[in-house]
Length: 89
Image (cartoon, rainbow, N blue to C red):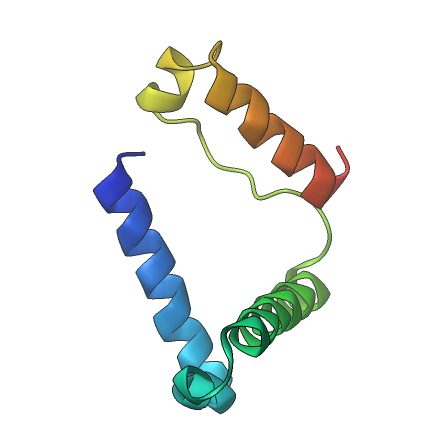
């Protein structure tokens, strides 16, 4: 995923979160450390509710050509590490 596409995905996630968690509209008025805690808490609750609705397990979708081309680099190892930490598989 290119940097701009990744940024679009992250921005879209924040739009979704702002629709569910209205406290995110006032985040800039808090100190930076509290902003970080609020955002991480909203993401954690969002993920918890998603797992509760859809079940546990990593999402299944076909790997893109980019992922297949970069299967043996350092970032792929980092992605796999994060995936294992999140999904435990």
